[in-house]
Length: 455
Image (cartoon, rainbow, N blue to C red; front, top):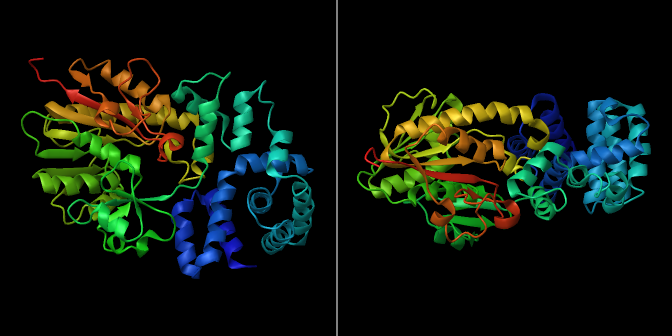
């Protein structure tokens, strides 16, 4: 069995069996086995494509198998999903896709599984992706959410969440469909130069192209970012452009008085903290980065080393610092990650509405803590990598309903160079990035000023 498909299978099984993260495990296995070039690209395509398209492929397999997909032995089911992806969404020839899948099934489950895989995939190969979606997806007029869920391979509840965030109705889901399609596309590699250590111009000179809006950002068309000198020396790092702009939006609000103490309330793994720390060192400010999980606090410490920042392992909901201690506070709260499904394709199958409900309680507590931590006249950025209304606008409504001393600032106005950020509710001052509009993760930003006591 060729190594590319075997590695893809190992990652997919690890995701299924023990909750591994494909974006962490796959690069490690490629390095361990020395796969580069076309072999690495094939393993990556099969792995990510299979995880991303699982919902669509299961609908096809249900039509081609004599048993329910849920009843198929898990390793064989993963082989079938991998074969379906190669048949329906890649340029791999039908004979190669079927024969290599049969060989893999024989290796992991024996000759009986190999015969079963051969029979099922030969049926899958009878139609292309468009024809299969027309055959297995619910009727678009009668069940528009169900149709989009199967067509673009998402759980139905996520389709509904995107619809609600975009303010659309079931009778017209045109932008929801665009968002779902973009959320399943492989993203480019976005880079961020650490202020004071590297520049956008250096990244461009190394072969990247400048980011559209972030003065520190750049995009790589392909290849390994670790091959860039600035990344290898930790003077630049991989970071989504919207994530960069979320950090920059916190600094885009003018303050009266002191501007020397900044807090990153949930700093791990350190992307925004790295950028804020670099800027703090240039502005005569000092960043305190905190995270409740020790391993994430260590990652934040590594990301902000040599910047003069401090990192602590602390629970942001029961902080050890005094109220009103900070001039600027970043509250990039834990969330469902529904805005980063391009980079974490398996996350769509792991999360549930119950997760969003549970996270909402934590998000409200962290936002309330951030507002307590900032001084009167200071500013808080509430950020999530999710467009879900219950993690964004609903959290703001719940917390602000208990705080009369907070002004909601115009976040799209602060990021005036970026089009299409304003949320659909009348009078909204929140900013929402989208992959189909901006080519970024779907990051939400609210900017809040703690009003002086005399206001």
